Length: 301
Image 1: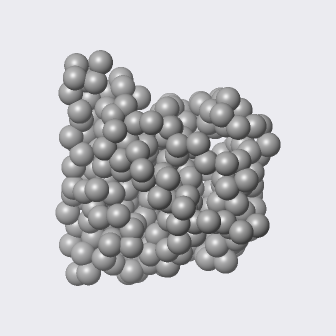
Image 2: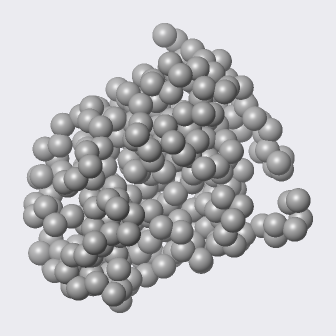
């Protein structure tokens, strides 16, 4: 199918500056086209991306479309800046469809400058429950939700920036000993309940753990600072960059700045007063943070 990509992006950006933000009703065929074309690109690129700085890295968005647009206004709309998103585009927020459509459209338009990793919510068994399925069904069809599932099953799961910054949605895995293990994961794939792929999308660092611990989520593990140190030394890396947990300032360090958690949805779910953050990595690999302050909730109501 012939996708009028520029028209799609234009309509998605037309609602900029409105709050509460209007919905953008693309046609179902246009959205299916975004899924099909982006899926082809994901499969043509590695499951373990090897990227170069300068680049801006963003954590969870969770359907907070207004805040995604704020991030781009702050960091520069593509292709002004290169971007890497760490997953969790859908669920919980009100506008998962606009959010994922704009991200996929930018992926298609700027395939070498715009990158998306898979989060634990880019998985049918999770987004069936936490809002995305219902949003697809209400606004379009179950068939469209299935098209997204086919697309999500092909997303890359990790990235390395200039051989020094290792990025994923969740964290490390006790099964991860060589980077080739990630490269050998074949796509399309669902996210299994255990194992390497599951851990990359689900695990969490824990200051109270040494080694590997049980995860309160009931999935995957927690890992201690010792695990981070050993992993970085072994693979000659400087930093692990991940998302997956709400942090008050939008970013939070762990293990003496060897790991950073990024979360880019301010006022998450309308229930938290957290800020959102984006990490800018310059060409010398110096990292700085751009913060989206939480909007005063009294004003929104």
